[in-house]
Image 1: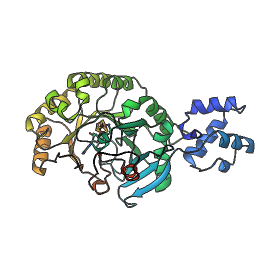
Image 2: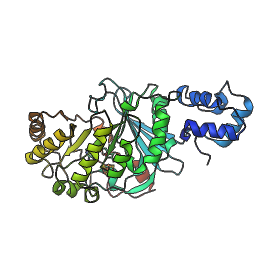
Image 3: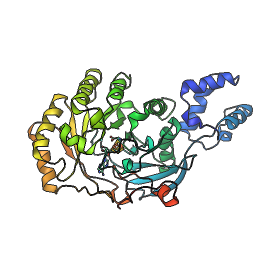
Image 4: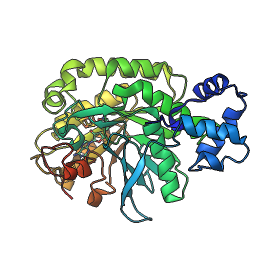
Length: 362
Ligand code: SAH
Ligand code: SF4
């Protein structure tokens, strides 16, 4: 299988051109054809000599994603299912308006991007974690989701959240190549501040990303304000307990301008006690983070429930009284299994490629 040209950084493309005896300036033209004009074959790259187009076609494919299915209507949340070269599937969700949850403007088109097939972190409430880890996505498979979503929708994507399937910081090398492609000025040219990476709290990688020159936003899946509560539902907390996580977040704050976001799923009887809200408020205050409260989305096969609306609001009020910006998240795409935490390998399950332990609710 040929590698996809959508996985080559600008430098890597220049390197390839040099080894093929071609001038470096062609890289810019190729980038424009692939990312801006979004052609589907090398033959369409009209300002390249025919010989170079043939060389490219022998060395690369344009994309590594085959569109397999779209769910949802054009004016609402849409979920795209892509087939990868090894028969695995990955999903991206296009969300028409992001209600200012991550500090981004509210009338934008946001794409929720996957970073892995499955996830190794096994959070007890999460559909992606249920099936276990299959493999990392490479840069072309990550950045290619944005290109494909633009092609399929006919619209420009304004912002990205890395909140689809997988743990993005466990795949940091390929994620950073993908981000360099997505933000490159001859490519999609998305501003780094329109990209939000969500992590379950990989402390060394948070510190590493804090050193990264681009102003990428970070959201932390906290879901428990104390070790006692958090480790019940997030096995990673045993490796990186809350105190170490917050030390890394302070390190992040010392190097980055953008406000951190703490994500907190509300699960009845597990983490929704108002004492948790009090502790969460203190922690958020200390690192000047805002908090997104996410009423739990039901996953079939798991017995967790979302608390009543009243309890969710009471939890938010505790935070607000402490001066914390706290949003109670209105889920989009719940009906198409595209809400956060609901991305699962349905298609693979149907085809029997992997046996998932539980079916998704709709
Ligand atoms: N692995 C990363 C990013 C993917 S998960 C992370 O954990 O942050 C994206 C978000 O969806 C996380 O905040 C995750 O905790 C949340 N999520 C997972 N399962 C959920 C569910 N059933 N209901 C609501 N949110 C869920
Ligand atoms: Fe993985 Fe994130 Fe799901 Fe946890 S919440 S299992 S880290 S995708």
